[in-house]
Length: 108
Figure (cartoon, rainbow, N blue to C red):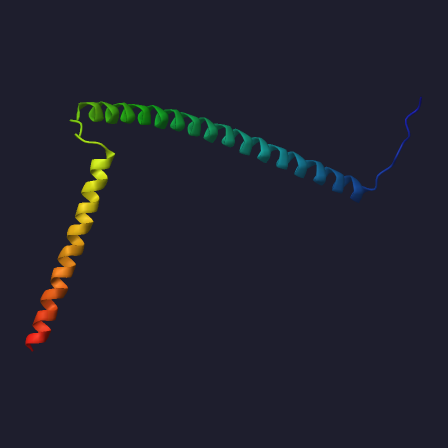
């Protein structure tokens, strides 16, 4: 089987070479970017592992501190009652302030 012969003009040959060289440049730039990406990705993974181990250590320290702290006596209901009594105290103080203000107004 014979291969067909195609003749290029000088300008077509020059254009073809320029295209080939620009493609080679693009491929080399792509390779450089991929290697940079791989390097950054390795750094990211190393930092994630370091962060994860740091979080685990800190969480263990927090849990240890929580276990060593004295427990608060009483249940959640007691805490809610304390909050309600605080709110009632605030309201009673506000009402007393209003009453005193009314008395002052009457005296004027």
